[in-house]
Length: 283
Image 1 (tube, rainbow, N blue to C red):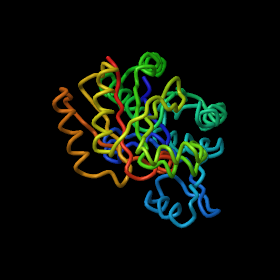
Image 2: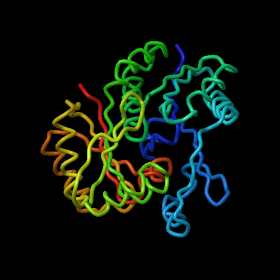
Image 3: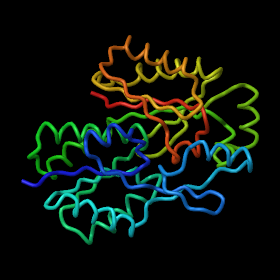
């Protein structure tokens, strides 16, 4: 039986310790800023915020291209000869990255692709579920793993609140009228992944400390999340007191493990500093 190697994109925001522990392979997506192309992960998120403060513009983000995927898959096969690659991709509804992986995979054997229809912590939840399955059953066939993962894609639930309407406005995701109204009323939109698409579903009013707690309550009321693991996301700038309070609420709700995930460039470009999110798998 062939060893399964798991891969995904940088848009999963996988923490470095999990990448190392589970031997996960991550291909970078791109951030375009000041006319320069940066690989996601090589650019400190703070520089994105500095760029916005200087220009009142946000960088653009682009997918991993087919040539980069060819190099990425080749490198994995060289480093792990005789292995089978299972690539768990960033949602195809928000990026062309997965389609580019499909194009590149045509040049190889033993590469199996799965559109996770999710991003950041929601994608991490699926990747980590896959890692646990492979570690429990190292001789599992790739086709069997794909089948098991397909059954949980629709159970990965992600919700987050951007830290700044400024970034949403700069990216054209809210109108000036909505921005002014939202700023005056201190309204913060809740963004969720629905059928692979980022959708604004609710509106909260108040400071992030109040809003984050409301989001946590609504999320746990709406979804029956597996208590074994909860992923909490933050973009740089979220107050430590909020993080501590979310840890308390997660513990009170019976979660055995809570993992904090820092939003990378792909999400931070649109959410701005001080954002908060939740992800997990439904039972």
